[in-house]
Length: 120
Image (cartoon, rainbow, N blue to C red; front, side, top):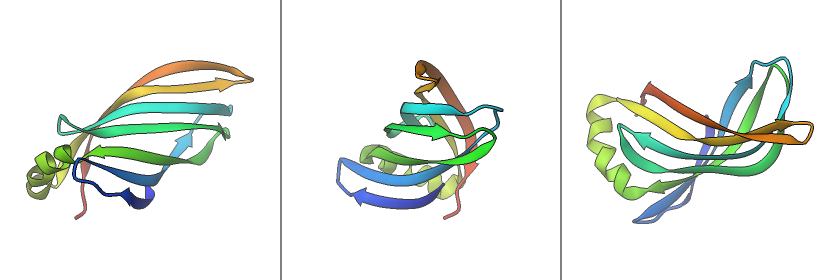
């Protein structure tokens, strides 16, 4: 993850933008059309992650996803003490992505969950 920016700050909702760096380990390239996911920290809803752009992902290569996350600020306040005292959070991202090749696309569900240490 790099280039995190606060686009809009609000009492109920805020918007973060960032570049997420991934690696395609496959021996073939694919096209990514859409990502739609919900993000949870320590089982509390944080916000919605959406990407609605067509991009080509090269085979066996790193790629950058420009990302925008709508953050529910109530979730931030609920998790603030947990983050301050634990320095480690359970990140859970659940959603769907639309990928394809040669014009044929398929919606694929994904469910990612892992513990991450936070550097504050």
